[in-house]
Length: 353
Image (cartoon, rainbow, N blue to C red; front, side, top):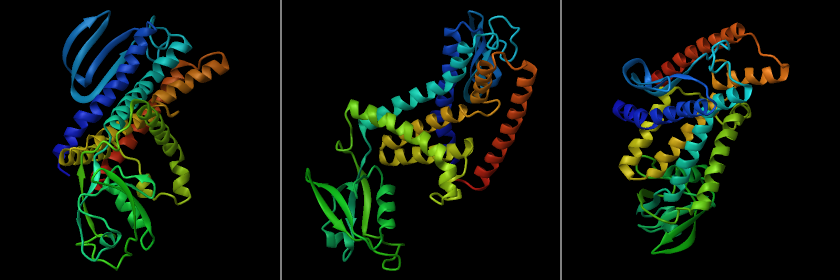
């Protein structure tokens, strides 16, 4: 993959997602009158101080990684008006606001994606003496569903026909404005030359289509379902791996380089096909993943700090700031080490080959 696509995708997708996350923290802190020392665009070192208002420095920084919020007294409850000195309620909502902002962003992006709908998969050519020709598929047919599954992209169609080799699959197509059902039996491996042909013998393209678009209410419901499915599959992934439902490669964690590879490939696909649905969907997916990951009870993450707030509520008194700070420091060192390993993995074994 061209590094330009990766860099472009990082700038256009990941940077805004990270910025929205930090903006959530910032807005919540201000609502609870928690003093914020600095709100920066990008990561330090600082390039320029834009202005200062109500005791908060607004800055532009050299490293283009979204942004950051520096609340006063983050780990020191003796600092008046600081985060650690705020009430448990204020700390809980301020710490969780970043993830909430990511979930809201994901909902809006998903909603817009479902409103416009994906480009439809269209048959560009039919091989002679192929299962597709025997089934009656013609050039220009729009493939809407396969075995009841909406064909949002060609991968869904290819995977389904490959998994059902030798067995009849049902295609819902649209031809000249009318829908019809056709049945086709994909060929098994060895019955065709994969270098020049496929299991059913068609070449595919994309076309703009309103069949797959949804109304505002349906789009909102689909957005909520999509966010829930991402969180559910993330939680269930370890069990799916143990049960053999997914492979280690499918379950591998990725770092910023791997995420940029995925986003870059999707951006390139969108540029080639004009199908904005896929780019919007991956943007929403990354936003959900970032928000959910930050809520995990891992020291140094928002979820780790939230855990200390909950422990304080249960115990009736807070854990000594020095001990909590040490836990978060160890957690940060662990996360930095893990991030380094993931970056090395994503460079030496790219997730997009």
